[in-house]
Each structure stands twice: as C-alpha cells, then as structure tokens.
Image (cartoon, rainbow, N blue to C red; front, side, top):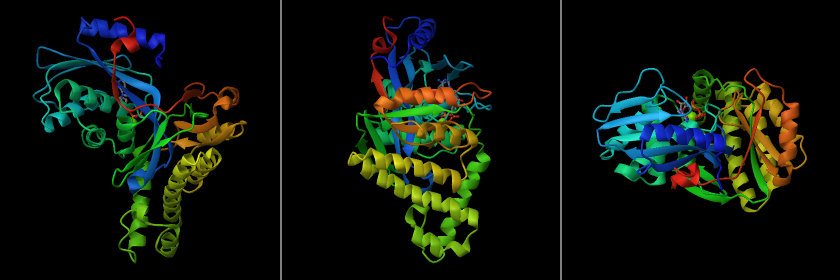
Length: 399
Ligand code: ADP
Ligand code: MG
C-alpha cells in the first residue's frame, strides 16, 4: 500500500535521479508526522500527552559519498545546502537545513563517524501546520545517518537528541512530545507519554475509529510571545502552590484542591491557566483508561472538554479553530473534536466512526469559510509506526 500519491513520488524520484546519479546505493527512511489526540500544553508542565503518528510522512533518501561533504536537497523547500563535515556552523536565517546540520553535529558528539553523504528529502506533512514536519525531518535524519554511519540510537535516545537539536541548535523552544512519537510510534496505537520520566504505553485504537485532521488554513503564527507568556503563568502558579506545598515542582504535581488552596496567591488569569493544565492531565489519564476499555464515547467527550478548556481557561483557541470544531461536532458519528498543537490556528483533530468520515469531510468543505490561504484541508489517517527504513522501490516504484 502506498501512502504517497503519484505526483509526489514522481517529483521525489526525478529529484533523486538528478541528485544521486545512480540510485544503487540509495536507502530510504520514512518519518511520520504526528497529531496529539489529547494532552495540550501539558508537556512543559511535566505532564501527560497522547499523540499518534500519521500516514503523512517525510521521506529521506540517503547515500554515502566518497568525499567529506554533505549535500542536502528538498523537493519542498530551498535553498539546497552543501557543507563540510569537520566544522558545521549554524546558518543565520532559519534555513531549513539547520535541522540537518544540528543532527549531524549531535551524532558526531555521540561518537558517530559521519562520512560524506547526499540526502534528498520530500514530505507530505504540511509544513508549519502543527503536524510536526520539523520533528519528522530531524528524526529521519538522525535515524538514517545512524544506520549509515552509527551510532544507532534507541527510539527514546533519538527523540531526546533531536529535541535538543531543535531547542539548542535551531532555536525553537519545543517539548519532547513531537520527537518522541515520531521516533517511537506504533501502528494502530496512540502513545501515552509521561513527559517527566519518559515512561510510555502504547494504547490500541479500535479499528472502527478514524482520526481526522482539519487544517483551518489559519496560520498558527506562533508567536513565541503568547507561548512564553503561558509558560511563565504556569511557573507562577507552581510558585504560588509551592509556597506551602514544597513537593510541588511542576503543575503535574498539583491537583484542583492544591490549586484552590493557593488561589489567593495568584492572579485570576494565572489560576485559569493552571486549571487547564491540571484538568488536562486528568483528562489524558481518563482518556487512556477509556480507550483501553473501548469506550470511544467517553474519549470523545474528553476531547471536547479539552478544547473548551484550551479556549476558555488557557486562551489559545481562535475563531477559525472554534468554527472548525463546531462544524465537526455537528456531524453524526463524530465522537469528539478539539484543536491540536499549540493553538492560535493550525489544525483540529476529530475522532469519528469510520463510516462518518465522508460526511465529516463534506460538512467541513461546504461549511467552513475559505481563508485567505485557501479552503480547509481534511486528512484522514490511521495511527502509523514511527520512523523506519523502507525499500525505496516500495515507495518510488522502479528506480
Ligand atoms: P511544524 O513542525 O509544525 O510543521 P515548524 O515551524 O516547527 O512547523 O517546522 C517547519 C520547518 O521544518 C520548515 O520551515 C522547514 O525549515 C523544516 N521542514 C519541514 N519539512 C521540510 C521539508 N520537507 N523540506 C525542507 N524543510 C522542511
Ligand atoms: Mg515543529
């Protein structure tokens, strides 16, 4: 089964032929995008998340070179890059290959003898829509170069290394969730992740449920400002609670009783931010239990509550997200719908009975207003495996 349409594979193959010359030594690594089913803005509070890997994916084609150079090309984005492997600076202007450069440096720091290589990248993950194309790029690079040159890291090690690259080399302040699910996803399972100690549990998703992602086409201009402001509010709340509960070092450690006891020591907005995080952690735990019991109705209700809490308490929704969620919730066979990702735009995630997907898609395309960036996009996905090597012919056809 190919998850890549023929236009995509033709463009990727054309670029690969032109770049590699011979396809004989080319290996193929696939890293999925991801969606978070529930557990939003909990990761940096040492809390819980429940993402799944998608069949939207980034493909990295890799082959070693005789010389000591890296040549890195994408069919989706320029400019191409060429750099020597003995001294790798960060490029100044958010160039996309900084993700690659950073991962090479990180592998070298772990003892990897990274030789010359050519890499051609193509992806079906919409860039900048909150489905984590950046983590897919990092994880595909780290996994693929690890296979070619070593070291071959475990999934959790790979995720941790890639997060550090994004934080410290690229300069984006993200939690561990994205890289973790991209590196460790399992087909037909969501991944429960405890962001404090990185313990995990793969939770099966019943086969009569579909994950539907709707891109509002409202760019999530995230906007370090509001994000950092939310993080600061969480820290303020922790400080207020810890004044008489020193064991509380993150909102993960608090419950509503502790928060209410400390309410007089924080502003109302800070109280509401903290209430979102505390109730959201609970909802993730309840969702996992519901999923294990096959109780999709409860799971859907928790998704709805998550959205309402993100909107009313955490203040990270927007008109487009609310509108999309309302359209989805109105469709018969939809169990729950919420914004996913950091908010302020980007995508929603909806849990629906498989037989409701067409109705849902129809409702979105007819009811959701076209944005300046274009009409809504609707993706249906199963939960897929995390990063893996595949036979290039299985994706590209005859080479
Ligand atoms: P998201 O991870 O939500 O898609 P980000 O802003 O974190 O959005 O990451 C997007 C960036 O990742 C792009 O601007 C680009 O630098 C890089 N990137 C992702 N996919 C590709 C690709 N296929 N080709 C080149 N660069 C990519
Ligand atoms: Mg990203």
